[in-house]
Length: 323
Image 1 (cartoon, rainbow, N blue to C red):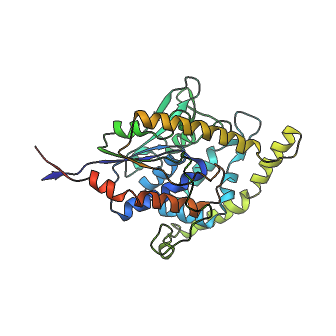
Image 2: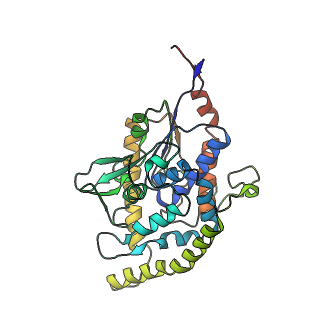
Image 3: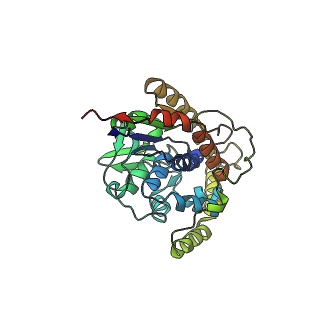
């Protein structure tokens, strides 16, 4: 009898580039590569939790139905407090519209999320309890979203200390680590969204449908209600600074600055704790706020994994059972 090696999937931070994780997971599923553990940071934790609750198709359908630029407008403006946006209620809506999972125990695949203790500057591991609280913590982009208080600690985005948490997946017991890093500056083969073919990631003939009519109606109502919030945020920011908003605006400045920091941290961390397979989708041309590049991001994630499938299969060769 042979033992199958276990696989840990690491889904890194990357803001709007995070939709590449959908394509990466689809490529693994298509190749019948199992995933036994998931370690996620920021948007990677969000996509990973939905995948672990069998809700990835619902998320993909939602993104295609939405104007990507409206995703950001789901969050309440709180400027000028400790963050420009408060995400508590909206993260809950953006998660529960796809799944009924409420705690880590409800997930079909073990998931661990990474956040950062704002006061101590240390990595915080989130692996039990309320999923929404954990997601709010790991997705609290510094300066953009308000920090989250959990067990007497103020937590922000895990990408501040560990954007691609390879070590966490290894600690979970995975034999083979597949890590998806969205912080590289590798540029797409084409800066325009690549043409979609029948066999590639968009799978137009197999587009998923939303779970229920009621959830589809919820998406429609939420879209109509929140579509003006993004403009409201821009106006509030402009009023506060007593000038017209001009590129680069405050949001893009903060997110780009943090992105540059995460890129450097990722390179250092991956040099010390290397995954067995490193996936780096070619999304270097995308800004962190390009939420309207859903199709392009998903496709690049899919292609990047497809290029490494044979390497993954080689690593997963069965080992003899010596017991």
